[in-house]
Length: 320
Image 1 (cartoon, rainbow, N blue to C red):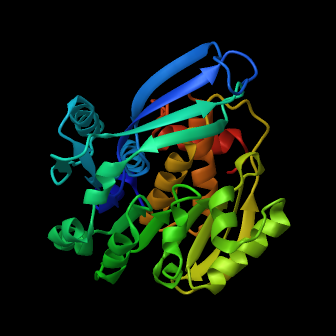
Image 2: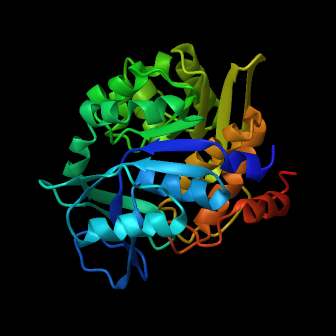
């Protein structure tokens, strides 16, 4: 399928948007101490990042999100428009400020800890989703993050949808909202911590990751992708007449510049591959290659991300 035909298909992305503030120390991180380093500010939020990445890859993305009636909110929406994302249905809250996500990175660029102020997402509720029921039902693909509370997730899952639903786990604290709902999820993307919380299985190696994957498939998820940091990704599932299959994709040794946002780019790349009607393994490879681009970038959203650069990265790391 061509990128042009993908651009003719609308993807609806539902969830959080926020301003990302990342702090990276110049040396080893010392807790309970002021660490000299570098601070960066960027547009973020899982759903917002996924929508922008999809637009950069060539898809037509509509973002259902909530921001405050403030300068940060206007900045976020303007950035989405500049990236080619439709935000005409985004909600502007009169009660809460725009969400802010504060990340503390290690010297190597990995996430050490984060704090998020995201009260505004409570207004992404079932009533808001119901107002956009027709848009969601007609989308070729829907992507949702677990910034939505459980009633909103249940309302979304109750809706008739033309295309599959991809869910991103977001964080260990929020992924628990999927408990009891997994048999209604078409595609689930989790990182190591999210998978551990949802399954109760410690992911210490590929074998344990595969056990967690099997448990999630056994609970009714059709397709599962588990990211393992430097360990790459394991994937599995069935559907569309394809028998159940499993596999893993390994990452080449590399220097991580900034891990913040790589998971969101991965989710977007998976969604894009689904639009292209790619198989499980090809989707996993495409998503990992897109993640490599993000891991090498200072920005949460790599400015060089597009369909060509992802395919070039696939060639570089031996995926094709």
